[in-house]
Image (cartoon, rainbow, N blue to C red; front, side):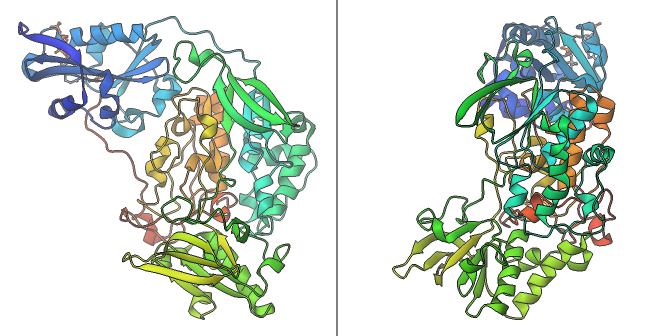
Length: 617
Ligand SMILES: CC(=O)SCCNC(=O)CCNC(=O)[C@H](O)C(C)(C)COP(=O)(O)OP(=O)(O)OC[C@H]1O[C@@H](n2cnc3c(N)ncnc32)[C@H](O)[C@@H]1OP(=O)(O)O
């Protein structure tokens, strides 16, 4: 018998402690559940929580979870009543199908109409849920229940839209060609590889064989192309000249490529972000500017490989532009200027402050030091937010990419020889242009003491990049709260947690969003994390395109091991600042397909995985 005082109602924030306690008593996972508290239906007798059931909604699909009845009240129809309410609500919200993962209750849900299904059949949004990402053990049974007839598929003849014709966007195009899927490739710049050309003078620290996507190479080879010597280190511009441009010139690619086409907004036809019903069969709508006019096109899926290069982080240590930064813009270069070439005059005989702790800063400092040997009066200073210089110096000989290790070692040597003024632990707050035209930088040291450094002619800001999130404003995206990476990647790449090159292989599942058919690829998928390597992007493109083609077997077969940097840390304090990204680390340095991890790193740097529970639901 159920108590006469039984009430069923929707949960509110104050109910979470009691729900959590019930789930823990029954051995059900709690990870991620609180985010979906608003969907929870509760059964109460007075203040006492007798049972609960919740759902995570992903577009027109939902993941049933946390179906729990207190042991003393089981077997009296309470579970069934809770589920009836949830099902009613799901139908009212036009949810097309309900799914669940369970270890011990599949028999229970079979009686309610659920059927066991392969995990791979789960809608894309569900793949990004905490339960799919690890809160439920791999042996949990996946079950589904259709609430409405399946939506008709979107017209197959619509193209896949690839945004950005950098190495990863072009790799996606190569995969789409191999799969025979129609596509359109939109590039804002006037050339493929536009961002690489911006630092075209920089020599990459990974040799050719890691800079070329395999599917691109296959297609190029068929047209008589000769691969560059695989052990040489190319300049960034050479990657464009010798690989990307020849590939883009192939007729089958050239037909699909729109240069000078800047995408400004994405949405779904007839749907704003709020509308759920019919969403997944509504084509994407892309708005873009080309030749001074606004255009729109429709697509069945969108792969955003636009990178982050055009969104540099500012000088301000708090992530905001330093006060006065905009006014001083004419004397600040963001990225890696061509100090030995086109921009020599800007730095020769001048005093320059380089801000940042990544490979871009190292490259700029070494170029300035070389210039100082030729041009009298050239002086250089280096400001970095952290005082942990060893991180900026990298792993040296322990780095699996020797050129990357050598870059840090050369910087260390330069600082030891007194070739540069080092200002570590400096948190920049303001930049001021003085009457003599020089810049004064002020901020605080790690103890909070005010600091002011005057007399800089130029500043090179190499503090990394961040993604432009405005494109996805009308799409349903799930991002890591601080990295702004795809949410599932956050724990794997968070520089607060670890600094190794080790990232668990990942593909279409980790890259999926609640918006079916939308994926972010390449460095943008890592958001603000500085550890992206180009080979990661090639593998992402391969997996996502295989998934779009319906080849889940290939999409799930992920093969990628990243080389260690030689500087490993795990569980770094939250106050430890992240090393800023650099193009050398972020956009242009592919990695060996499988590089052995140095012994020192092999155990210390296991990628973080979400907390696991013995049970599931
Ligand atoms: C998506 C998910 O949340 S999966 C996680 C499911 N939850 C759990 O495993 C937690 C522990 N179990 C419970 O909290 C409860 O037993 C629930 C939620 C599974 C069922 O709730 P109850 O209120 O006990 O069930 P209800 O009274 O509606 O139905 C009882 C019937 O289901 C059967 N049943 C209950 N649990 C199970 C089970 N794990 N497997 C198969 N049958 C079951 C009972 O034997 C009973 O059968 P009968 O009608 O032939 O006597």
